[in-house]
Length: 170
Ligand SMILES: [Zn+2]
Image (cartoon, rainbow, N blue to C red; front, side):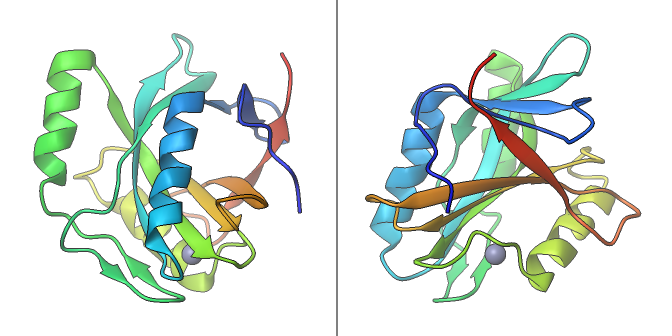
């Protein structure tokens, strides 16, 4: 399991053409959501910005689960209640985009499941999200101590998620 320092975390595709940087405050918030979920999966969406040349995205906010989400020990179905309003508000006030999804695998590997892949593909193909290459963040392990975070890119026409590699400096 990789130990991820909480400051300055960034992930890049293997070809280094696209990266994602995590605001440490947002990452701490994600871990708090995972901590309060106990033994159940939980999740939400990632909001943030793209750099000018679209070479990387910065996540400023990981939201908690919408109230109509369904939480199981090995399943999470993110609800939609209130999300559209939140996304519109963050766009209007701060020009923040929907970047993708996150969820928590309690005390398990952060490896994506087949369901995770198909959900991300659905989002990539859904015009409502207007995000052809959404990001997937999965936190696994114990959010109080030994956790890991894996980041993936999803594509409209690909039956695979592209793993992004953590880079600690730069
Ligand atoms: Zn999952």
